[in-house]
Length: 112
Image (cartoon, rainbow, N blue to C red; front, side, top):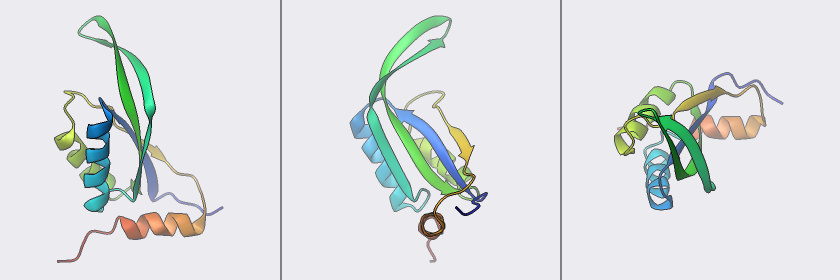
């Protein structure tokens, strides 16, 4: 297992599958994320404006580099309809050297 302190996993969600697919497509196409996994619909429970809310959401799990995370988060927030979208950046402690290198390569900014 290889150290990977430059790789992060970003968690978010989307209110429906169509938007989740759009977000994933844009982030990968723009080389902000190497990969975006869309989870099965699940129920999220949370307080909003002092009211208990429940909404079905699609979990998004995105892999990128720490250097690309701020740009990816900014783009995610542009695409997202929520006033306060979930965005959590989690460190990667290790993994397959070839996969980690693939994430690095996929998230390189395009040369113009």
